[in-house]
Length: 237
Image 1 (cartoon, rainbow, N blue to C red):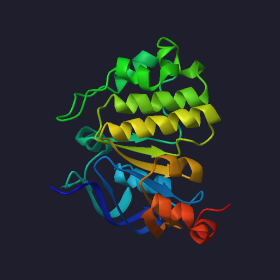
Image 2 (cartoon, helix red, strand yellow):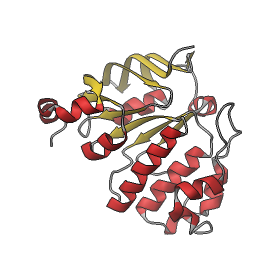
Image 3 (tube, rainbow, N blue to C red):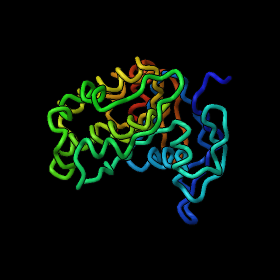
Image 4 (cartoon, helix red, strand yellow):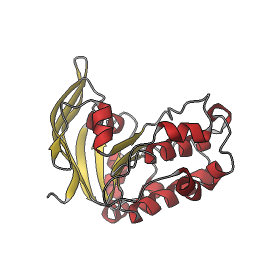
């Protein structure tokens, strides 16, 4: 069995005639947090959507648990154990916190402890204080937490988080970092799209840096944090 939960090789993606990704290859090991970094428009979200089966025009190889997923629909990939938290927080605004969580429920997986609302409220105490509040009346940061919690109710083996620290209060960013560290201890694999160097450094083991749809740098998170030249070339605004 491969040590890698996710293996992506030679991924190309297109919007119409415009090519967005060029031969992107990456992998995520079991219980590993990997950051996908780059400026706005570098191709981070497109990479995640391609892995999740949400792009129409894609070629290359994507394997989850060693199984090819290229021809699967997003719901089938989710059932295999992939969770995806998009940047735009797609919660059900008319449903309460508890109702949103129930929508995401899937059976537990072998070898993994089952996620329940009670466990999630320990991970996200803010949500535990408002189980009956409608999603539409929550702050952006609270909605972000709810999106992650609902994804975890699917008992995934791996989660992709698209810009989790974007546009939320510093206290929420800190809670998100603690959450990712806790999930790693639980054995979950995480692919994290991020621009915030400090946040990525707190939680990530390795990093891939994207620029104009191509992988320009790969290494440990510590190596990138020490490499001012790469940061200036591909991450500085």
